[in-house]
Each structure stands twice: as structure tokens, then as C-alpha cells.
Length: 463
Image (tube, rainbow, N blue to C red):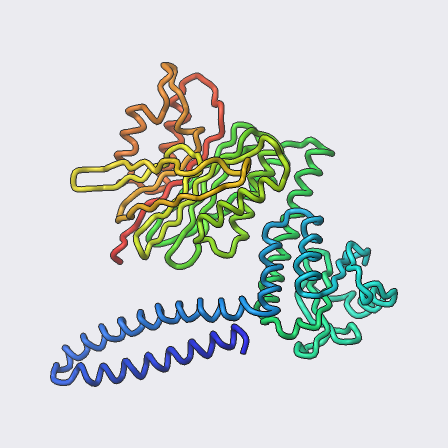
């Protein structure tokens, strides 16, 4: 039984067991309490049974998922999918095909441009070397829409996955045909996940190619800046227990600053703030690589894993002097906790409202810079979150602003007063006031760096 069928069966079983248990306990517990007392007991039992079922099913689901995707051909296909998440160029993609499909899965592959049917790559195998293969594929698959499907012995489309000779994915103008006898034993969900990751990969390739093309041919930096802004979130997550707002002002058209807020699930939101060394096209590319690596990662709760992936992706680009500093914070609004990594960023801020007034906690750097040398052990810290707590993330373009007297904004009484008032402000108002303070604090002096701010305010956690 595949993952999806097993999950459905487990869900149905858990609901049936919960209903039986709820009925039995309700019957045993309400006897002699009257209508009102019985109603109160039943309501409490229903809530407790529902929450217990939900928690247990989440644990079962994780067990089912790992058992389904960590064995046999499904595991090998999943390894290929995971490899694609770190690919940023076509040569890297082809290397993944050779090492994870041809070598490990004993498969053959053909990569073709769908509009011209030009051959991009073909495995060095007898099947793919057959001169009749490409004409047969072109005849059978020329007019298809984007998606995934299976091939039979005659290289035609088939719905019989158990007898399939291989499968194909059509994504962003490319056909990827994979021929493997073991494809019938791969969990169907593994194909759907692979299709999604290939779509994301080709989007990355097209975006990076567009940046290089614009920079090389037209030198229109405004267009590069517009392309770069597509890496930033168009809309921040809306959550009843964490309000968010952001401000982004590049010093020049192309910035090295970046931020993101990604809703992981109903209870957790990943907050990202980073600053790439330098400016210009190289900084824009590193920014895009960092954000896309984080967004493409399956487990966004693994902060150490995210940091290692960003570090590896940047170093693979081959720039000798490009790196990033990075803050990753996972706000868990169920456990009321913020787990974070501060990789050489300036201290970020958590403002806690106590009975004695607001207290400013500094989330200091606990790791080194990212992208120059391989990371060793990654340190993760955590702090408690409470109702009306305020999280302020920013790059040094804000906190290191200097007045005419040479006093940094972070050390100024104006900044301290604004932090003390932040618990009573909405996130949008707080970000506006921080940005305005930064722009007016320097007087007649010109800005010397990008300014990026991401603020979050914790809502009523007891709801």
C-alpha cells in the first residue's frame, strides 16, 4: 500500500477509534450529572479526544511518511528529488541525473526541449542510443500539457503504472524521460513531489539566466532590481497569533539585503533576515540563491539544516569574496517559543512586556558567516514568547546609522524610547516609525547602506 492510501486508512481508523472511545467514555462519565453537567463533561471529552487524535495522527503520519519514502526505489527517487533542491544550473541537474538516477536507480534518461525537440542530454545506454527513440517520443508526446505521466513498452502514454517502462515530466519547456524497470515500485507521491521540485528548479535556472542576460546585454540595472524584488515575499503570512510587517529600501537599485516570512504550518512561521557582502549583480545572485534554497527545503523547521544548505549553495557558485550573514528564527506559536540562529548578524531584538515595563532582549550572534568556508557545528538558541512580545529583525543598515555627532542609532535614546513603546504599536506602525527614525536620524548625511526591517508582534497566545 502506498503512502497516500496508508495515510487515508490510518486517518479513517483514528476517527473510528476516537468516536468509539468518545462514546464509551461519555456514557460512563456523564451518568448522574444531569443535563447541564453531562453537556459540560461531553464538551470537555470531545475536545480532549479530538486533540489527542490529532496529535497521535500527526505522529503516525510522520512514521508512515518515513517508512514509505525511505525504502527501496522510492528512497532512491527521493534522493534524486533532494539533490535537485541544491541545483542552480543545467550542468548540476545533469550531474544529478547521472549520479542519482543512472548510477543508483539503474535508469536511463533523455532531456529534450519541448518546442524544438532538440536533445539536451541522453544517457550513454543502449536504449537511449536507439535512433528510433526520439522520433517515437516526438510522435507520441508532442502535444501534451505540463505534468507527469508513464510510458509503456512502445513508448506510448499509459495509465497502467504497474506495467510502466518509465515515466516522463513536462515542465517549463523541457521533457525529461526516465526509463527504469523499477518505476512501478516507486510510491506515487514521490513522482508528484519530484514534479514540483523540477518546476522550481527550472524557475531558478530561468531567473538566474535572466539576471545574467540583463546585466550582460542591456546593463539596465532597474530591470535587474525588479527581477531581484521577485525573490522577496509579495505578501507576508497572516496569522492570528503573529502580526508581521516589513520595510525594504535598497541604497542603489540592486541590494544585498533580503528578508522572508514563511508559514511552515498552522503553528509555526519561519522568519528570515540576511545581508550579502557587497552590492551589484553578484550580491543579487547570492541573495536569490539564499532565499530559493530556504524556500525549496522540505523541512523548514531544521534550522541547522537550512544554514548548511545555504552555505553549500553559495560556496558552489565559486565567488571568492561573497558571503552572507543570516538570521533564521522559527516562531512556534503552539509551544510559545522562538528558536533561532544568528549567523554573524547584528543583535536582533525581542521586546518583552513585564509587570515592571518593557524589557529588551538582544538575540546575539551565535554562529559565523555563511558561504566562505564550510560550517562546522551550528548553535541554536531559544527564547520564550509571550502575548504582546515584539520581534524586530533588521540589517546593520538601520542600527549602524550615525547622527551628525557620530552616535549610532542603536545607542541613541530615540531608538531606546521607540523600543520601549513597541509593545503598544501595531507591526505596520512600528515598522513605519523605525524607518522614519532611521531616515531622519542622520540629518543631512546621505544613507550609506540598505535598510531592511521585519517586525512581528505576538498576539493572544491563550486563545
